Length: 171
Image (tube, rainbow, N blue to C red; front, side, top):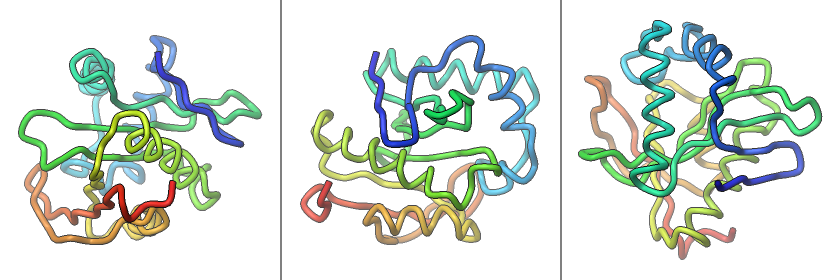
């Protein structure tokens, strides 16, 4: 089990007792407006989503972590990788509760994950797929050294492709 720690965060495997907060996270319209089709997830679909994240670890050997604040051990979101069949590339993504927006947590956790991708997984390129209106996530991607390389479509929505290559990263 891979656990990453930063000054303020713990990125750990999901557990069964994360489900209630995970379901609440994805039932919040403010959080999902720029994710997938922009619609909230029912509890059943949230369960499937969480199961898919856990299964991704089994199938690929890497995936998305639950994120805890180190000081309170509170569940604050998810950060990690997605590389499913047919996906545009090895993606690093982040979703945090609004109470933790604007405080550098997404950047801090994503930097740790990016270092893991380059240094432990041997990845040479990492992308982040971001809705064009999601200014907060665009700023996080830019802080990670990612640059916009173009546009694609995911879940029927226009999506920007931000990317960083290993040789251009100083992690």
